[in-house]
Length: 408
Image (cartoon, rainbow, N blue to C red):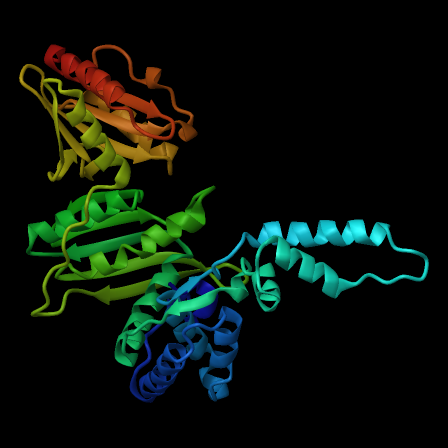
């Protein structure tokens, strides 16, 4: 993925414009991509520093240097680099430095340290050929990693990926994002919302006269984990393109001065293209489903697929549907650890009178107590540290289900 410093946008008033290469610029991009792909494929077995130097040596016009840097970044991201096999480089360095220090302490006034003898002694100690010692000594450094597998994608595919990467890089600087969605396929909407859940994004969905409005918090709006969150937000864009049509408006902080600008993107699924497959449950949810099944209780747990309307909060996609022959259904939504505000909105919802039993799971990092929700309320908080525990989840589910039955 591109970083925002590899994107050149045009400012027009208070709006940021970023577009994929087209016309003559696209043709130049294809030429750069084709030469770069061929060069990298010929350099399998070489060190990363040598690959980088070879790419920099490709003749490129000054006006296309920015374009080339972005294409090279995406190309190398698809390649596989590995540390040279051998002893731990840190152990090698420690051994050679300690031996040199001992030898230096034994030197006479006019004696000089025999570095060749030290290298030979270390090579013998680690059973290495002397000509491999220097290579392995710093093999853990990024620049010495070996290119073991080159990307085999075509120049056309690389340039196409570059256009998407430009749009994704802009979202890394977003404060907030609002998307107007138009889709005739309910599954596309569910797929998008499941992707929001899978990426652990902070989102709100509301029904509009002409479609749906999806609001997302941007990474710049968060106090911590903004880089990781930004990557998750950017990864949502390919799923968003699976809707019939959309218009995305993002408030971004752009440039060194972090100037607030608006970025607008229109798109949608092309006719004749197949919809993307649904994402699997997040790893922590998948693990919870297995753990509940292993308990062999009357409770059953399945990945939830419904879109639930929570009055006062909006629409949401619960992660898990829990069912008990006596207690009925209880829905579990995993809120993660991005925002305390999302937790308090759900607490207010439960206190206002929720019409279904729900458990909201949140990380202890948010510093919210389960005791916030007490009394005969059809909702419960489950605070966990690290991973969710099946028994505790079911305890909170029973609490919420019992309260729901008492609610008039």
